[in-house]
Length: 261
Image (cartoon, rainbow, N blue to C red; front, side):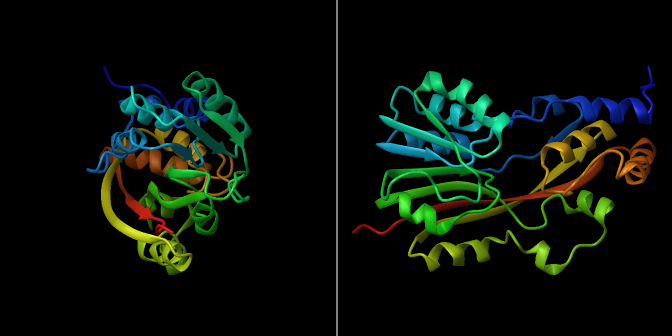
């Protein structure tokens, strides 16, 4: 039986889904994204099993950190902390991570980290808005590691440019791994390993597009259904006629070390 949901039905559905946390299970059957080959959460868990004090920066709803801790079990650092800047996510992360004895600290993404110098031997982050290298270097102890998966340049820009038009070279390269490597090295950190991959994304209906743009707010800043109704309708008609809309995400993995004293 054909899907008889209208454009209005699908848009309303995508606009009604809660956006807290980083659980993407709602997208099952509606959108897909390839995962990087390195398996970030599993690899983070392996590092947690060897750490003494660990911090997860911009933890979202805590889902990825929770999975990494489960992978590390039964070994785990005796000191665990996480930061998050969005109040709904702070509450969600606290509820999820408190049973694992993780202290979740509410801290704006662009603020100094609320911890003492050299407090951690492992700092993790998955998809930080930006990496504050000076602060990361400050809270890492000598010989400590920053292990993180970052969003790369021009991620999902096939989708972004349907809504806001062609982007400048400056915006396209703002998350470039070479630029971020230079930022880390400028504060004395050593890049042990840096890998990058381009990954296929598919959006099978306009509800998935609406929810994605509401959830990943930096893709189309200020996105609302009302403001972008013409673009949404145009893309809906494109999907109805031609099938899934294809875009590509970019990701890079950092393994960075603070030199020993």
